[in-house]
Length: 387
Image (cartoon, rainbow, N blue to C red):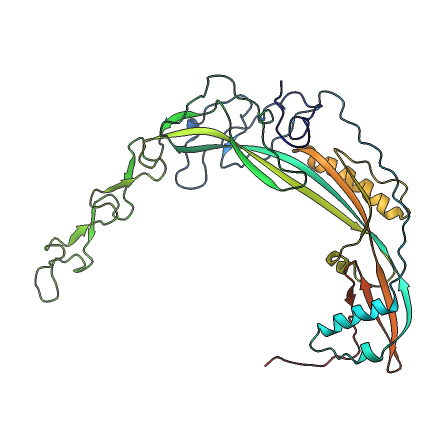
């Protein structure tokens, strides 16, 4: 029986979903023959652990597929249709205030168009932003090692639990987090492969000789005055300072302990994948500008799995919702366990302000809850430089 994971979200959060029963079949992939770096252990150091045949050293085996559902999946609740909420254009005073703040932030913009410009028309081009977020848990395994100093050795005592049967402590929904867990019943002791169980390796500074060319006489044994070198006593060589003349150094892999504890680590990752769609409008404001601002939330739906939005007035938003929900299922359900989804619709207010200055028409935009302004063709700019 699966043990539930302790969390604030109930017994089903962070565990094998009630629909999941048993771990997926083991991947038939041979263990890697080496890890990155000079201390890579040989493949025969890794025992065969049922359910972990695809595990490699260095963690390059990819994410493990979650178990297949053994009972029907929970059916998401149909969310109510979002309201048809339209926000009118902002007032002229608010538009002027936002315009003045924007111009004052530009060192090369004159304030004359703000003071003297006459607003002739204000148009509302409110648009919608749809966002789908999927919070999920991914798991991967890797062979690991550490110097053996008497730790528990439990390989073979009983079968190791499957990668998706090990309880992990999850964060709150939609919070990124990682956790590494030593897999029970996979730990064994092996002689260090780098030093062959000796605890020492040849010194790389002197190539194991224990001495090197004297730095004072460059190996001649004499100084320039034909006097015998006192630093090396005329030998032309001096003891290696790295190994104190022994020719060997403590093994970097086992730290001189001669043996290694070999075990499997389970790497658990909680992440949020997000997709956004902004409905097109005819205001003329570049869509990239809308990424900088927030909107007024019209609709929010969060549950284990969400239904696509239905019946929304802007058909492009409903189409985007259906596409994103489908894509997230296809892209992430094969390698991760989906724990929660959240979808929102924001209305982003956009006001196009037409004004006259010195007999010529001009335009600027006020957009977002922050009343940001865009005025690409500001009519009174000067070339200035900071000395």
